[in-house]
Amino acid sequence: MPEGDSVYRQCKMLREALEGAVVESSDFRVPALATSDVSGRTVVAVVPRGKHILIRLSAAPDAEEMRSGAEPLTLHSHLMMDGTWRVFDRQRDDDAARPGDAHTTGSAAGENEAPRRGTGAAPQPGARGRGAARAASSAGGGTGSVRRSRPGASPYRPRARRGGSVRSAAEARTRISADVAIGQGSHTIRAILRTQDVEAVGFDVKDVRLVPTRLEDQELVGYLGPDILGPDWDLEKALERLSAQPDRAIGTALMDQRNLAGIGNVYRVETLFMSRTNPWARVDSLPEGKLREIVVLAHKLLHLNKDRSMRSTVGQAPQGRPLFWTYGKDGQPCRRCGTVLKRGEIDDALLTVDPAPSRTAVQHLRTIAWCPRCQAAE
Ligand SMILES: [Zn+2]
Image (cartoon, rainbow, N blue to C red; front, side):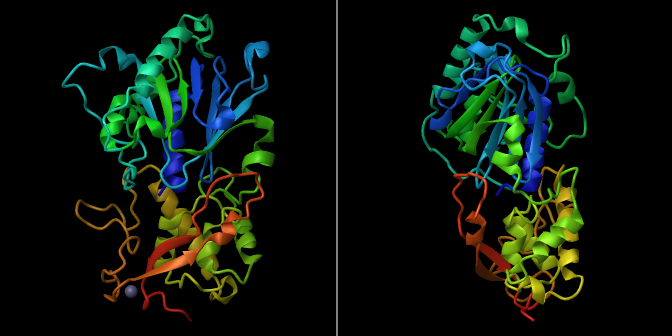
């Protein structure tokens, strides 16, 4: 399940691929945006906010031709349970059909989150064929003169060569035809942004919206608490918000993005185990300093993992070692005390109280694993 760290990595990949480039064509496959077109706009920034991805676009170069308003826009998407953005190299399209050259490096958000929706169906011609056709038509449509905001600089290739990036653009670039093989059919595509070099495709991303950038806070992310991976992370403010609802279970309070943004089920489960905290303990029942310890730990875990390809809370996990203490391990012995880990359900229903006009579906009951001994109720 995507959490703050995967959103961070996705944004890094998208930033390397898109920032500074002009959108040659766009394709939104959600009803509300069916007629929207952001071609001609430059991608000025790709920003993670909690678990939201904000792709900021410049004002339209030719306002009169734009249907969605001329001012700078933000393309919003949310990964929810199984959404992912991937970047494809358009320049390889020419030899894409060559047999025997069908290597792929896997999903950009792959990590330990295997795509769930296998299609099992034959590859659909939709995305690629259509993409190539549209790209060709847009290239001939007179947009060629406004390709880049930085003349002569390719926003993509030089960055792709930079070493050390866990999910480098090069690693992430695969051909769209490879998708079906890993279980993400073109029918799950919700948004496509094409630049001269790349095609960024949002599979199963939720709540795809175009909002004037000046209204980002108001319409999209203003309700979020301090962003655990953001430059403006504010521990005290997060603690203050958590403490403001003393009767909530710590397990649900941690997931409420209004308190702090970025924690999902994995980090909730792991943080609570590592800090020996019962998931259903009321916030005001925690021992002195415990709340701070929990949030500091979550912050540390997310930071440690933000540039890793394999998420792990047990240190640099060698091959074959478990990557988590308890997440997904109910029924197995606790790695600390040997007690069989329990499976529990925690109700995140309160999280649906979302002041932003969001239509995202939220799954209320989430499964968690916990140790009845290490995390016993007080
Ligand atoms: Zn234990």
